[in-house]
Image (cartoon, rainbow, N blue to C red):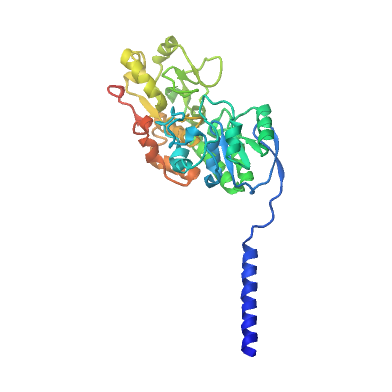
Length: 385
C-alpha cells in the first residue's frame, strides 16, 4: 500500500512539474495594441510581436525589412525578388543586391504578392490577399492609396521611407526604429543606427580639417535614377561627398538630386576634374557610347590621368543602403588616400554587411556581373574594350 501511494505521489509530482514547465514556456501575455505613426504620417494600430505572416511591397520595402525583421515570417514576395520565376522583371539581375545575396534562396519558396519593379507602381491587392498576411510593409508613399489598401486588406499597412540622405537620413533611421518596435527588435535597430552614425562621424572626422585648396575636384557619374544611366547623370548634392567633405566638380545646377547634365557642360567641366568616380551600374550604357565615340573623354583630365574609379552600384530596385555606406568609405579613401590608408575595402564591406545581415557578403558583391570585380581604379586604356 505504501509503495502504491508513493508511486502515485511521484507520478503526480512529475505531472505537476511537466505542467509548470509547459506554462513557463508559454509566451508572456504582454502583446498590447499601440498606435504608431508611420513614415508618411499615417496613424496605424499595431500589436508589436504578434505578427507571423508578413508581406513587403514596393521598391526597397523587402530590403529594409530584412535589416530588422525575421525573413522566416514572410508569406509572399514580389516577382522581382523571386529568381526561380521565368516570367518576372530582370533589370537588376546582374547588379549586387545584398538582401538577395543574403536571403534570395529562401524567397524562391514564397508565393507572389505582386510583380514589383520600377514599372509596377500600384499595389496588387488580390495577390497580397492570396498570401494571407497579417501585416503589410510598404514603400508606396501615398497616404490615400495606403489607407485604401489597408481598408481593403483588413490588416495594418505600414509605410516606410528613407529620405534624400539615404542611409544617413533621419527618415531611414526612423524606419529602422519603427520596424524594431513593430517586430520587437529594438535592440538590433538601435545597434544598426548607432553603427551607421559612428561610421558617418568617423569618415567626416578624418576629412574635416583638410583645407579646401588641398582638396581635389571630383565628378560622380552614372548614378541610377529609374534605371541605369551614363556619364552625364550626376548630382551636386551627393550625400557621400557631403559626408566625406569632397569637393564636387558640379556646383551650379538649378535643382538638387540626381540629374543629367548636357554633353557641353560635361566637356566644360572636364579640365577641372581631378578624379572621376563612376557607378558600376552605368558601365553597360557607357561602354557602347565609348565604342561609338572613343574621344568622348578626351577633354576630361581625370580620364587622361587615369584617375577614374569604380564604386559599386548602390541603386537597384531602390537604394542598397549597405553599399551606399561602403561607397562612402571608398570615395573617401580614393579622394584622400593618406587619411584612409588603413582601410581595406573588402574588410570594411564585410564589416558593414555583418552589421546589416550578420554575414560577410563582400566577395559576393564583387562577383556580381555588374560589379566588374569590385572597387577599383579603372584602366582607362582597356576597361571599355
